[in-house]
Length: 332
Ligand SMILES: Nc1ncnc2c1ncn2[C@@H]1O[C@H](COP(=O)(O)OP(=O)(O)OP(=O)(O)O)[C@@H](O)[C@H]1O
Ligand SMILES: [Mg+2]
Image (cartoon, rainbow, N blue to C red; front, top):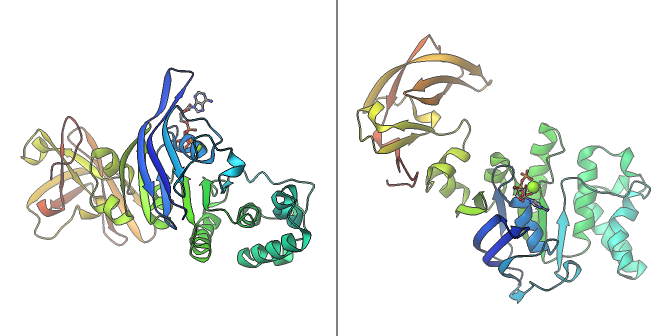
């Protein structure tokens, strides 16, 4: 079993600065969980606490039903893949992948077998004798994954492993890591600030803000059923529109949320005309930006939609989320 359980986990730096408040989370065996949130919200801190690279100030962490609070990182049966791949420049790919095993005095024949298996899984066979500087960014990232794979860990921890890659390679590596997860059948905990990465990769997404879990759920639950304005605004691009009720002739104690792709519904219940100030052509679609009351809003339109100076919106009440205007908590 390689489930991971966090019970009332807290982290305070210098006895004053609390960066993880009281996190409770159960990650199932073989699950792919993505921790997502803005810069500084505590993602790396939480992952590093699971790895044992950071002390925990309170609470308990279990890996495979064993409490690990006082277990050294090397004895936790985890492998960590960082944003900077931290390969040894003077070693070949083969030596980089084998390094951890060699340090553990694993017999040479076994090391060779494991390196060959990892190279096969990651398509690195033809690069084994090269040094890191002779590889592309994506290939280097695969070597870093290879180093983790050969250790047969119970849990893979990955901290923004794709953020140094260009956009195209990032998309490609996203699906390679998903495939890797299916092949290895191991628990993955993956940190990113990129909501697209979170939506496309996670079996389950955990949205963090200021050291608190805002919501945990499948990508569909997080996108379609956000529990507060933070989650609703963080996941989705362009972000959900938030409109104070009074600008829609509705209850002004409610903030209404509606996705940009739902702004031009045929036969909508609420019609309003807005002044468009910016439009963006994205190839397959077009985005128009405007204000409703004091809030910046957008509409996602077909690429061939002709946008004038004004846009006639037509909103359907059934597409609208209701949030308490003060607390931001979902009401309906
Ligand atoms: N050693 C430290 N001492 C004091 N504060 C720290 C220390 N390490 C991190 N922090 C603070 O803890 C908070 C969370 O940091 P963390 O690195 O976990 O954020 P993150 O979500 O991973 O951000 P990013 O997306 O930028 O990597 C930040 O406010 C950071 O400044
Ligand atoms: Mg980080």
